[in-house]
Image (tube, helix red, strand yellow):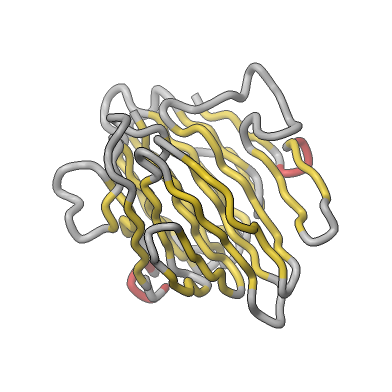
Length: 232
């Protein structure tokens, strides 16, 4: 089953400094049919104005992945971590027993991010944070694993959940495949471009929820960048 969730039909809000779209119920947006997808709980599409952002606030027992699509985001947290993550790169935060953090756009340009929350395998673990650059050339033409808690994905940023996040950049006319293990679900969003997923057309910002499929054939109608999460 493949369900298209058009960007125009997503929940969201405008806060002046923030334009956000919610693929799942979040904050003021509630849809009982879109509470989660497997252990994927949140997928927010955030556009953050220059010199603004999310001031320090707490989280616990959630794996939080931030994928920067444009500009950069500067992270600072109660563990003493501070780092700047640029477009095409990813950071992960395991909230564990509790962590407070800020995510600020300190740039002179707009920043665009996907913020993805995945429920952890185990509650009450120590909090942690990490970031890593992933040059887009490394994922050109095929999916590359960026963050994962699945055995065998040791080169990815670690997360404490039975899930992986992958990304691919495809030129118009190119295609790639992704195999889905039995019983798992996939959620993918083209950050840019337009793609065909097993015959379903998705444009930039659209969500594609996949279940009961064993193989995805993804082809690009336009130059495209694709972010996908594989969850239990």
